[in-house]
Image: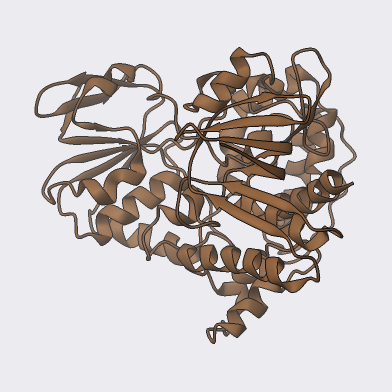
Length: 448
């Protein structure tokens, strides 16, 4: 059986749901639209679907509208839900609530216009797809076939492909948890000693899950930086920043100068970073391949720590938990491991002493390298020479409007990407301000 659609969106997390919403809003004629998402709930995805009801957004409510051109769309939705925040600049909504918001945006778009759109949600995975004379043929994991004139890959953040550094042999150990989002189902013994690898946003989620479940065993967090992400400001102050530099080294120097200037005026340094954001994509596209590679190798971790920040309340909790001895954070540029039947022993390569843990959790975050992606679909498209990696072998290569570029340097007809899959071509492509703008522009390109 083969089903035909004008457009198929592969993935129903945030980016897939928002581009589907924009397509329904912008279409001037009836549209046959399908979203293929294995989860039962569109809009949830990894970010908002596999978290607990205690996890909150890391951006305040007044800065996370999903609708381009309407900065207060999420605030208005909250008011309709009879839970308006008293201070939107200091209110961090629950992630599961934000998933409800994204799903509601889609439903409202489906029923708001005069057009009788046909929208379907296939609760499956796409395992393979190939070009045809009419567009694309997609195979689902139940072996059904879909046909589409155009396809959007909205796969979100790809899960970690393997353990970091020299820890790959831990995949064979029952004491190693590669997917941190399985922690809630695993329910480890509360007295076990647990190690968390990584200190970014994923690691913070993992630590919060453990401590809020009243875990009493020792928890040690290891990371290369030995630092948590920086803290959000309660209220952002506009800081106009028009960088003159075009080369990476010059830009770093200019940012440091701007931060010193801002601090001399009693302006928070984070406003300088936020002021740079409108220029980030243009600056990144102007860098040479060498500069992009150098940035990813030496500066990306620092950039992410300063750009993707945590709510003030989360920072206060971390401080309280650390002072109470609920966890410790250690810097370890490279870890060594010995796996046994009942424990895993870890140590930093520059230390003599080993520490024993009953569970080691990989919380290093998503995979960006396409060749390592744990995705049958992406691996098939790579093997068939349909797609290629983006700059620095990260994400898929694409044009400014999201159309994917093939190994022959030519745009692939009818195939587009949105969101985290465009990392490499773009630097900023995982947060809502960038995703909602991509969705608006991509919908216009697909419909015209």
